[in-house]
Image (cartoon, rainbow, N blue to C red; front, side):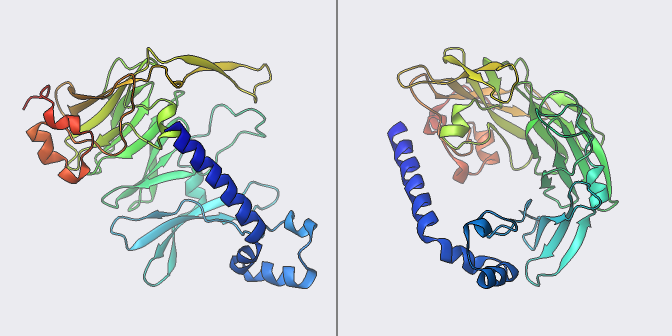
Length: 339
């Protein structure tokens, strides 16, 4: 696995070098017309290559398909006024006609999330900022906006926003349930649920720690295996399947924060070659009742769990998760679940 990753990285580096050497013509062909005209008049010099506006243009941020697949939403950057920071609006485009209309104004976006209480190192000032991440509700009724430690719901019909979660703890991996009634997220090594209607939150998993994580990935899974989540909603919103990662046997290494003035470090678990991997188990729990039940041991100390979505072996859950979502064949013979 590591050799394959190293080869892929080598191919990527070589590809980038070839593109940088031979791809200049292609870049100019796709550049905006004004930039091409300016380059043609003054010639392509070293100063022009490193000056603004960029020859590559500016990619559109926040592109997402609206439910139904007929519209596309995206952020539109607004130029700064009177020395203030740039603002952004959320727009909606009809995929067939190309017509655009304003979905959420810049003023409303800036009030969706609370101002951050702390700044990152070398930050220049406090204040509200438009959120950079959002999700569509599956039924198209609203938008979920995410901040570092807060979540907010924006009702598209009333054009009003209200906070769902706000605190000091970091929030990760938020998801909207398929029936658009709940928002799930990971906080303090556990999966949590908050009801959209009234903002009432509760813990879905309990007793998660840095050593035994529930619904939360460690460093190596997203970094080297491209697995981005550790829990999944059932299509009918009745249950959630999640991974429990036992990291107690995995070696810890100190990582230095080079942005820190004092050179602070934090421990990070990393399974070196020949060392112990986390022991991964799969659980399935009902959203409304009962403790989650164990499905199978997906990976032991010598291997990794595969990528994909879970397929618990209980007949009840086989009806909930389609067979095309299957992964981990050990589920098929698991007898620890009960009806």
